[in-house]
Image (cartoon, each protein chain N blue to C red):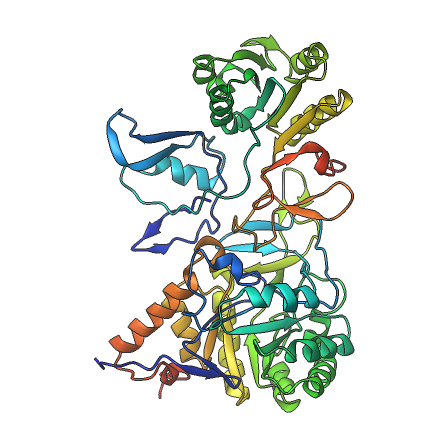
Length: 308
Length: 238
């Protein structure tokens, strides 16, 4: 057992004090979690996806519980980029690492968002939401077509020199191809997976449970799918990977690191345990010490493949 | 929000989400046997309807569950007209007992109208009967009190108060909508408490949004669960 453990990791050129981020859309603008955990003790957080103007969401019902998971169709409700930069960011503690998330209906909108948040010194990087599964226009259309995705990443890359991360949709046939497109267009990293497109029905009322009919499935139910996709993407690209999907405890997070992720995002777990990200960061460190690692970064890709 | 429980500090995740619950009453530093204790105690009253409440009902003494709270905004109880009319339907009755106690402490005159399908479904009737309130019960099958729904005695009493009452209604959406309409017709303020599904309870999942009158949404967890009925858009509800 080593006396000192280096928990720091590099994700897409962003120096993180540990590999645990929180996922966009599950962590508000950070301040909501101040009573539950110290934002300066987790790796960082990806803020709620921003649009150029404030945006209202779908009518209720917007969420439903499913076996070991939940469905949501919120639809990128957010305060807009101006309120985020002027009101939300200054309220955060100095040491909090903040990644902004951008959403739009065309590449030029994403690029403008990226340019505006890049001017702010508190923004460590930009994640492109190219994968929201429950918005009628934008988002997932880009994440499902390699040509559109290439156009999008190219436009945003031109607009910012900050670390650029693309959040990938699992609702594709070949996620490795999508990751290769991002790498070719100059992205510094990919986050995967966003929620899995899904639906649920109430047999008593014979209605879909969500007003939007379709929603995004998240939680432990999707974790093995996410893990498989991270593994496939790790075989295909050299840029940083952030593992996302149903991570509830440190063991879950370690699995993503072993499969090739250099960081992870905790999402749905924040709802049922608002201090989950800190609990998981501490658990990863315990794991690394227990297994004789001196650097948490060395867990990345340390999977012992069969026959290896 | 009540979690499904924890083992060694790690929450369980099936069922995944915590459940929003109203506090039935605060017991203070006295346990259920009447002994004083260092811990603050609250009592929950709920109907077993699904997996979450089944798990809660099966919990054994000493078992740990996770709780985040108190959350949201409760009933306003300051500077109101003399008569407070509390209307509870079904399991919504459980949200009104602590309110009744608080109003009585402030010297308010309190009328409680409780409604349920039958006598067996009429929660907490004896608890309310022991308070210094006027209690009216209604059941749909007539097995206790007036046969019918809460709206009939409510309308009668509101007609008699000459604009000097506040209504607090908790129950099925259709009941709250009817109470809101009866109050609005008489220019009386009506507060309701909503039960939209929610995942977090503190304003980040955005799942519990309720449509506001005049457009937009309010979060039931943070801006509610209590709303003045006129703030809400009731079209499409119930």
